[in-house]
Amino acid sequence: MVALGLACSPRPAVAAAAPVVSIAISGSHLVDWEGEQVVLRGADTSGTEYACVSENSIFDGDEEASPSSIAAMRSWGFNAARVELNESCWLGVQGVKPAYSGRAYQEAIEQYVDALNAAGMYVIVDMHFSSTGGAKKATRQEPMPDERYAPAFWSSVAEAFKGNPAVIFDLFNEPYPNRNTDSEAAWKCDLDGSAGGTCKGFKYQAAGMQQLLDSVRATGATNVVMVGGPQYAGDLDRWLQYEPVDPLHQLAASIHIYWKNPKEPEYSPCYDSACWQEVLAPLSAQVPIVVGEFGELDCGDTLYPPFLDFADSHAISYLGWAWFVGSCAREPSLISSYSGTPTAYGVGYREHLAALGLGSLE
Image (tube, rainbow, N blue to C red; front, top):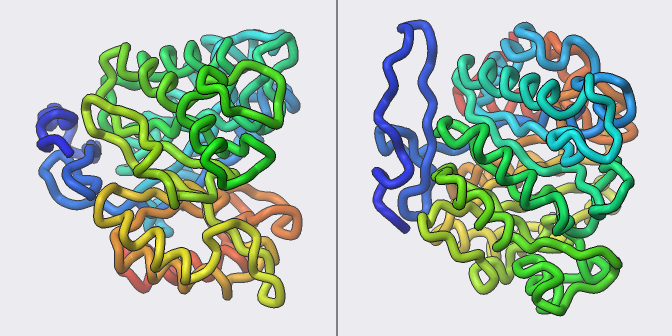
């Protein structure tokens, strides 16, 4: 890993009331502008990946990006938020309405990121919904990023945020090439895309993580970049072998971990303590790990707290899915209102952060 100064900028002059956040990688840790270790703890903010193509809006409701919602995040003790992006909407292609795409979408995202930063939070932006590169807009997760639009997406996103050292780039939400296998071919596909000749399970030309990283770095952006592996970003067992080449050495390993229910907890590959000890613990000693998503699908809070304890003991960052008001029975929703009222699933997370001295239960 490189010295801290390569990716950290001097502390900018700002008004006394505005917190300053800056993040880089030094050794196996995320660090702030002073070189102090940072562990990200926060949530995903769902809505901006789908509302622009399905709801004639940019955010999922007026309250999602409101000051009161951001204040509630901070009251829980969050120091990070992950903002999901839509490839078609950011680029303004494939027939998305101009009112919710292109510059209108970009400005709304940039303003939201600024507001989160001003509240003292780091922000991860990720390519969440991508297309297959044809005429059909991005309305769902695809197995891999498309070669036609994904590199242009990251060139544009990196250009927008390269001056903001508090923003992290998550190259692709959840790769699942080669029929969702943890195989050598899948890892090669993840790294090199269709150019590597190992991609299976889809018909379009795919961009690999190396190509997307190169697109980011070509803009001059020095931001930390997160890279996930196959099986919906569920595996890290071969991450070091298939790590993209980054001249700045500012890469973090990305993983998503979910649990189903107490009787049948398995839902993602690294749900149990054996994987944590055998894969995550040794990897965390070599590279920062960011759990970009975690969640419990039974709307409970009994399965994931042991993992959070493990993550805390290894300086592994984590963000819960998700900070949105929805049916917790359909997908993990941390809150029942944007004032921060927790769901049954969210209670355990808020209590965990409060026990760390990061947030309040009031």
